[in-house]
Length: 244
Image (tube, rainbow, N blue to C red; front, side, top):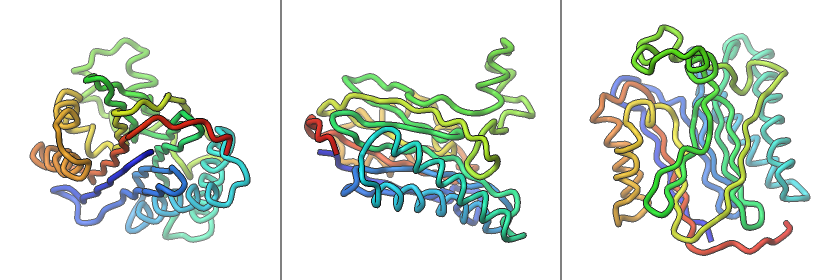
């Protein structure tokens, strides 16, 4: 069984919140999207992407890894069409990180730099890989981490939902183990607090709601320069394969 709690906050600087999250326990579906674009465009992009994935998976005949990838591709098409059809939405896009149970595994897929973590047996693991200039270009060039933290390209995404017909989706399958906790987060969280702080919060003997509030509060104490979203998913027992 999967239990989940999510929390989103505009942060300490911004007045609007372009993040969006979905908790759909009946579908074993959970996601975080971090929108971008002027005015209300980012908010529209993240909500549209999240709702599209939810609707696609709700109506799907099968529960498979390919179904999840098709749902994300459909979200990309819808955000692209919306951006092309309305001038106020031109240039909008969104990150997307999705968790979806298939049998005894949790499938995770991401586009952009929203992340998925796994806290298991006292260790925090980063599952996803950021689709950013820093991760895909800067580090491959051998640049030092202190240089990358100040580089003018440090916030540039190399892929996002709604910016191109060509979409690269990173996907992962993680066996479900009782007692494990998954975290989905926007970069307003993991971009301002380090993994040690995240691990300490997830290690606490507290309900998911308390841990989500602690994560958001930690990001706000660190300045909260961006919108902050955290979704926690707890595995309360092993999930048998259901073939659905």
